[in-house]
Image (cartoon, rainbow, N blue to C red; front, side):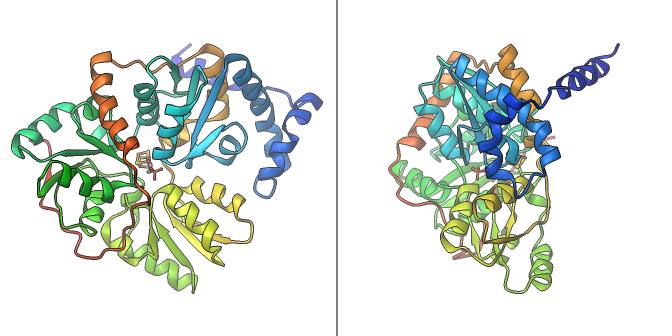
Amino acid sequence: MTVLDLEKARAKKAAALPYTDEVAAKTDHLYKRVETLIPPPEWRLHAPYIAAINDLKKKKNAVILAHNYMTPEIYFGVGDFAGDSLQLAKMAAETDAGVIVQAGVHFMAETSKILCPDKTVLIPDMDAGCSLASSITGADVRLMKEKYPGAPVVTYVNTSADVKAETDICCTSSNAVEIVEWAAAEWKSDTVILIPDQYLARNVAAMTDVKIVTWAGACEVHERFTADDIKELREGNPGVIVLAHPECPPDVLAEADFAGSTSGMSNFVKKHQPDNVVLITECSMSDNVALENPKVNFVRPCNLCPYMKKITLPKILKSLQSMQHEILIDPAISERARGAIERMIALPLTRQSMYTHAKAPQVMAVEARAM
Ligand code: 13P
Ligand code: SF4
């Protein structure tokens, strides 16, 4: 039997969890949150996992941190805390639970482990990566620091622990503009290294006079959106409000009505209750925000993040049953990376970064690894 056959056999066995009266009693209140989206036959497949996961969480003193891109059955069914990268990092730092299961991607689980070295942090699938995190290494950052001495390194949280260890301060899309300006002032430097997302860097550059050097990384989900996509969406849906994530290319943001982190977009919908909205980001986000805003109509172009979608209910259950896959980080690297994340969390920022393209999204340089 090959490894694949074994995986399939295991998946089949897992799929056989029965929907019983006991499962219904434990999950009916959760179904109310998603019933307008998930039909009953599909819910009956999810519910046994949800009941088993929620029971195990209690037994093992575990919490599940769910990113906004998780599918609704995870987000509403088993997530204890949900949010964007920054909110999840803060929640990891605050929780009293002994075990954190990261319903998100690997860099998020690493961030939790860095902030909580004494806790057990689990990721249900080790292959839940990120094209941004895999674009750059610690060695790449060291070379950039040699090339731009004195410039502080601001690193997007979508990076490995190794890269964070070379970093002065981390940022997320919800605070990148403010952090870049803070770092420039603190280091008394007119230039900041903002890595590894070249599009986020360009979008930040449009909002600040700080000179920005970046890296040739990109999110493979958001870089696929084009300005023409937005124009077509507007033609097909007159009056639609367009919200975009700042990992999209600058010409996409220039066509949008608002750009912000995943939670920034969600808050915009909650606050403004537009009649018709489109979220230029990962698909599941629209499902989750739509369920929380039943009066708003969502136009749904669909770009899936293949890494986020590796996280499923059966894998979360297995993760809690077998306490796999545990995130382990070299303590010396973790210690250095923690400083960069904690510095970000400690900054008293009062508002979320806005990306309105006040000026041209021009960066000073886009570095890449020499071939
Ligand atoms: P947020 O910080 O906006 O949640 O973004 C994380 C991410 O991976 C977006 O692609
Ligand atoms: Fe990474 Fe993009 Fe997926 Fe977010 S959506 S995890 S940035 S690949």
